[in-house]
Length: 100
Image (cartoon, rainbow, N blue to C red):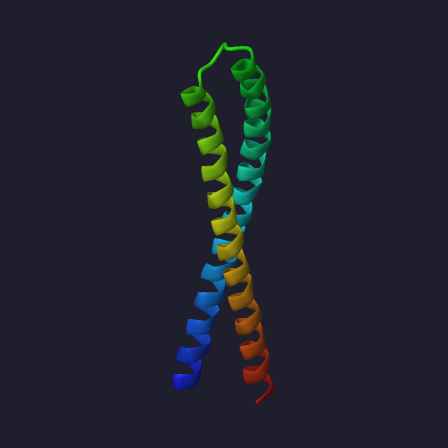
C-alpha cells in the first residue's frame, strides 16, 4: 500500500540521516583535535617567524591551513545542524502519521 511505502521511505531516510549525523559528529571531533594541534603549531610558528627561523611564506602557509580547517569545521557544523533538523522533521512526521 502507499502508506506502507511512504512509511518505509521515511524510515530509510531517517536511518540515512542518523548515519550521516554520526559521521559528521565523528568528523567534528577529529577536526577539533586537528584544531588543537594547529593552534600549537601556529604558536610555535609565530615564535619561529619572530626570531627569523622561518620566513613569512612558511608562516602564512600554517595560518592558511588553520583557516581552511575553520572553514571545513563550520561547513560540517552547518551540515550537522541540517541533518539534525531533518531528523526532527521526520520524527514529527512519524508522530503525526502514527496518531492518524
